Every structure is written in structure tokens, then in C-alpha cells.
Image 1 (cartoon, one colour):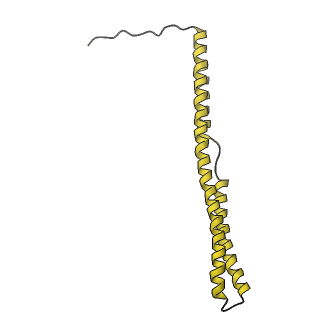
Image 2 (cartoon, one colour):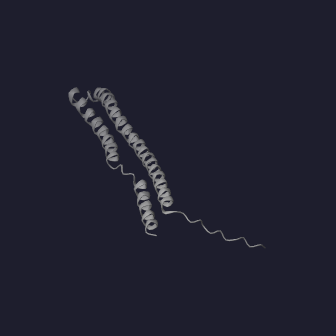
Image 3 (tube, one colour):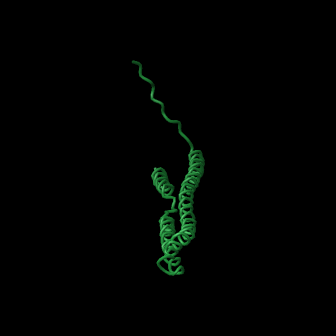
Length: 135
């Protein structure tokens, strides 16, 4: 077994080190911006799905309102005045649609748009930079 000689790192000037630091910092900032963009895109995609739920709930409530008013009101017309039957059916459909809309809006309200992963890596980068700058 032969021993490999130990390589001594070459001495670098302070200006070379500063130049490398500036280049590495620039690369790091670009990567953080890319991470923030990716994270915000994912959050926007999630929000758009919840907005679709709100729209679907509204359309369903409207369709339910029309269908129930027509069908049940015709059935209830046998035992009560038609206007009362139509009002009861419409109220039931509106309540169901309102519940779906509220569910979607509540989900949208709870979306955390803060790019938490990016903020965490920025904190880590700042800590790393301060540790290496103090050497």
C-alpha cells in the first residue's frame, strides 16, 4: 500500500476569494429566485383548483335550484299552493349551493402563499455566509 502525498491547497489572494464569493452569491440568488417561483406556482395551482370547486358549487347550486323548483314544486302542488312549494324547493337548493361555495372559499382563505421553503433556505444561506465570512 503506497501513501499518496497530501495536497496542500494553493494560496489564493483575497481578491480571488471575493470574486468567487460574489459569483457564488449571484448563483445562489438565482437559484433562490427559481425556488420561490416554483413554490409560488405550486401554490397558485392549488388555489386555482379550489376556485374551480367554488365555480362548480355555484353552477351545481343554480342547476339544483332550477331542477328542484320544477320537479318538487310540481309534486308539492298537490298538497299546497304552488308558490309555497316552489319557495321551499328553491330554499333547499340555495342552502346546498351556499354550503359548497363556503367550503371552497374557506379553503382559499387558508392557503398559505408564503414561500416557506425559500425563506428557510435563505435563512440557512445567511447563516452559512455569516459563518464563512467570519473565518
